[in-house]
Image 1 (cartoon, rainbow, N blue to C red):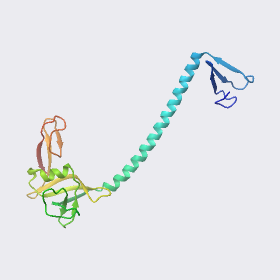
Image 2: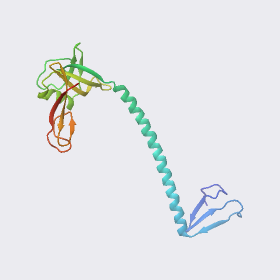
Image 3: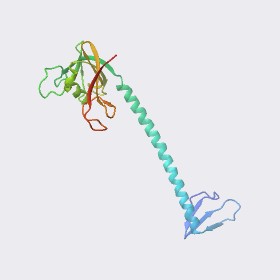
Image 4: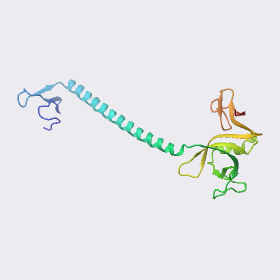
Length: 204
């Protein structure tokens, strides 16, 4: 008969014919066994499965914590490489396929921010860029953008956008008075689905 524990350890040996056969500890005559009723056996087996399940869950949680910790460290390290935001003042310009400034033409989808030294920062195409290009109430081409370099790319992502008009620096946003929610892209309020209102304030 196969055994799961060492001789004399008091471990479980087998479940045979509705009885639980356990090897007893020292002092019991050799070959001594006990026979327990089936309901007690079932209770013991259920408890054993619960213990094993708890052990597996605990080990799984430890593994998950280790994985998340490692992933978090990798993400933090990656963020360190791309989190060096820069603030640039310049004007929006159109870019050709090579990423160089070119005359704006219909169908152009690439844009950059050109600073006073002539350097161009290619911009990622997203809602923030679309807003700068299409919002008529800004009435300025002179922007101050907070940019984040995108890892493994020559593009920059717009993190914050402001503009100059008549020598003053403005911030702009879209506001829902009903929900008291401020966003930076035009459209419906994310809460009440009413149209948001364009607003701008002088930066002090």
